[in-house]
Image 1 (cartoon, rainbow, N blue to C red):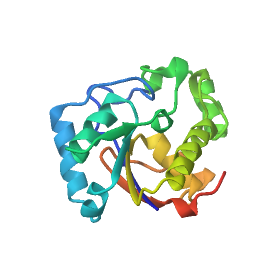
Image 2: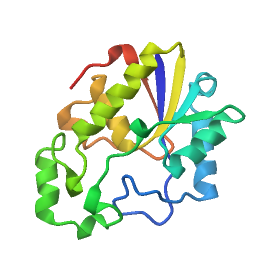
Image 3: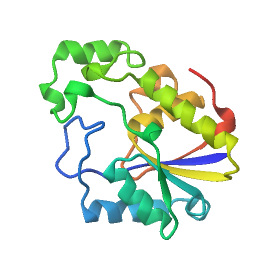
Length: 185
């Protein structure tokens, strides 16, 4: 089964800030920019015929609904971004250096801001993708977050733990994966 993972549009006034689970706004221009980029994607026809899913975050739902219209979008809590706990909404340069270093030393198991680790996001991703594999869906499209996309790529072997945190996932970018390639990390 093919799954297309799409990162939400760029949020308004969040440059340089940590905003994992925080529900932040997107502008109409950012939404239009993402729509144009996705529609220009090489597999646009295929992905636009897929079954649509989304993180419940407004920045994801708005894009998913615009892409899927007039079809419905199924929100899934499993597609939410990593919960950064006490870090949510803070500027990255306001975060304690020691806490950032601890996260960098163990990006998979450390819980930044005391809330959720990447391995916990992977548990959610694996649960969601297993439910897809049990369904009769041929192609799934999920509008989600950079952290979820990184985890999905790691679980399919497209990333390693050493490259996990370094990979840039652009706003509005499309990432195709095959669920048959899934593996627990």
